[in-house]
Structures are given as structure tokens and as C-alpha cells.
Image (cartoon, rainbow, N blue to C red; front, side, top):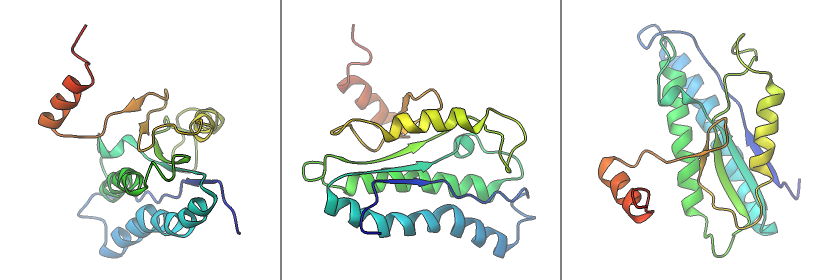
Length: 173
């Protein structure tokens, strides 16, 4: 391809085993699918987006790294790392030079898929995902969006969070 406008990173492996039951190979396979495959795609596609000066990269995340799931340590750890990749790549993009390239993370609601038999229809997650992809030019990147499409503050640590709150006037009337 000589042009790709949108990349949705949604590959995931979800071994249902405790940390001690997970073999080293299962751990590495999960890391390779859940982190390395998406990073590889971004590395290949981002230069094409920079040439075109437009693109949307949305990495599908999970709340599992914020509230770990029993018997899913490899999955939870890999989703935490991929969350950081989203923000790290966004801050490396020169927003003055490339204001129309956005990297974001989307935390969809629990959906009925091959990984889960409960949750909402995947069409609901798709509708929400489309709103992120359709963000207008010059929209801020590096955001993590929950299923209700509200932006989530990154884990800044208490001191930085308080500084952010004061600077953004969250506590002022």
C-alpha cells in the first residue's frame, strides 16, 4: 500500500491462566501478539501517514491493566504496556508539523466476541470507535477514551495529577 489513513490495532491473545501456570512460551506469545505486533504495524504505517500528513491510529486497550483480571496476568501486563505505547508514540509526533495525525487508545465496553461470551454487541463498540476515527483535524492526540467516549487522564502520579488539576482549573469555580 502507498497510503493508509486508519490503523486499528485490535489483535489480542488472552491466555486464561494464572501467572505461575503460564509457561514462558505462553507469556512470550502473548507479549508478541498484544504488544509487538501492534508496534510493528505502527512502525510500518506511521511513515506513510507522515508522508500524507494525515492518519489515525487507534489502539484497542482494556481496563484489565487498571483492574487486573484473575488468571489473566499475561493479558493484563501486555495491555498495560500497549497503553503506554499509545501515549509514547503520540508525544514523539511533532504536533506542529503533523497536526492531523492522531494516536489514541480506546477502551471498549466488554463485548461479545470469541474472547468473551458476555457484554455488548461489537456493533456498539464499532460505533464508538468510528467517532474517535472521525475526530476533526487538529484534535488533541494521546488520549485514552473509555466506552462512553470520555477521555481518561493518564496515570500521572498524585503529585503530577494535582499539578494538572490546578493548571486546568479543575478545582476552581
